[in-house]
Length: 153
Image 1: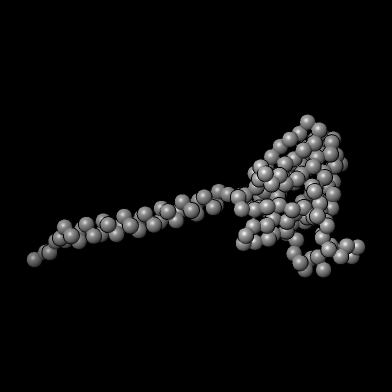
Image 2: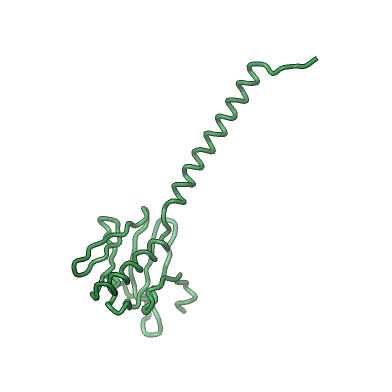
């Protein structure tokens, strides 16, 4: 003789499937929201690259600075005022890294990009409650690379 499921068992299975599905949807939403946000490295690359291109195309000096009130990286030059949004929870500082001639980092107001494509030697520091990340900006190519404590020694 075949035994069927009771109404209670069927409803219990449906409730469990709904609960697990709800948890997965909430987790997936957080995952996709986080994945869609650009990393500070991507924002650094994009802002530095854009500033360099503008300086070359316009044959003008372009300055990249952090606007704390608007929470953006601002690119300014003759006839240029562009913004690159900064991920929430992060602040930005530009500095000249310590080396043989400097005993400690020197804070800079902005990065300056020149019409020949060069940039003032500098680094970008991103600070949040959980982390501090530093990137060096290569003066001739404008490329952005991680800056580690070992590299500065």
